[in-house]
Image (cartoon, rainbow, N blue to C red; front, top):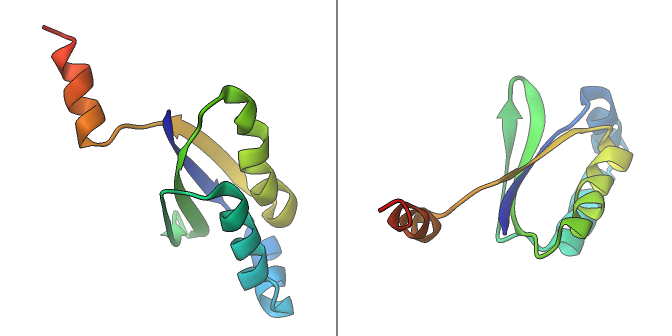
Length: 96
């Protein structure tokens, strides 16, 4: 199942990671571990945010998905099922 992981980082924890020079390494570790289909980064609601699109094969993968962001950045993490255009068309075709 395709999911969107939204990690909104604590400003002070992220500032510490940037000041110490560890932010690139920590992000690389998280991305290497999660292997997202796509990853985007920006300021949403005034806080550093990562948006990762992932393929979750089993719900047991859920704890490991958020853990790098919880432990390294004290982040608020949300995981939501999402669809691409093909998924949407397939789902809509079942409504007939």
